[in-house]
Amino acid sequence: MTRAAWLSDIHLNFLRPVQLEKFYQLINAAKPDCILISGDIGEAPRLQWYLQQLQSRLPYPLYFVLGNHDYYSASFTDVRSLVEGVIRQSDRLHWLTISGVVELAPDVGLIGHEGWADGRAGDYDSSGVLLNDYVAIRDFVGLDKPRRLKLLNQLGDDAAAYIRKWLPTALATYPHVVLVTHVPPFREACWHEGGISDHDWLPHFVCQAAGEAMLEIMAKHPDRQLTVLCGHSHGQGSVHIRDNLLVLTGGAEYGKPHVQKVFEF
Ligand SMILES: [Fe+2]
Ligand SMILES: [Fe+2]
Image (cartoon, rainbow, N blue to C red; front, top):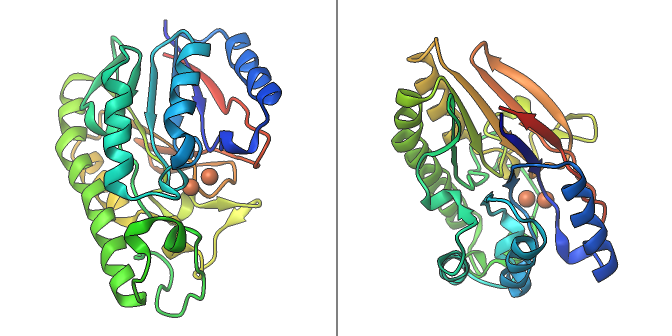
């Protein structure tokens, strides 16, 4: 049996050193065999430090994807090369986005990708929402609304392409696949303060292209199960999108990280 502790949106940059140590003690008390993290670990300037500290305090394999906040104050290229450098020096830190399929248990496979809110759910054109992403991540700075949408679409398509490549591969070997991502792939999984985000927020909170890829693939595998772990909208919830497709969304509050759930596979 493998005990996998799931963390999401831990935003470590909001914690003082004493709070950080208490959080690591809380995780260790759950006695996990491995850790799954669905993004928003911190922000780019201290991301390397946080990853190294997670590794030093938590003596298990750590499987993670990044969230939008992890790119703040930097560019996509900068953060990708930073994270590649960190994981190269570690045998326990695994960035799922470049890991393909990982075995969690003899009948459970693991894959993951950040995903990105792709502007397709809700009503992008009428939405007045201006996420911090669009001023804090260099790639978005200076883009007008149509060009921003183009980039959001592209990021969503990248996530979908990764899922189309690796989910069928994982399902070919494992009857149950866990997919870790940051952004909810379905409107129905976009929980916020007890409800579903509205049409103004959905374009910035759902990776629709990733969800469409999952639906297509799982329709071809009725005898297989997919469990998606996501975060980003900070509202806890779960939804069966199909009989064989369950999405769990992690609840989060800045400064109060917790263990979402411990799975026994
Ligand atoms: Fe978050
Ligand atoms: Fe996020």
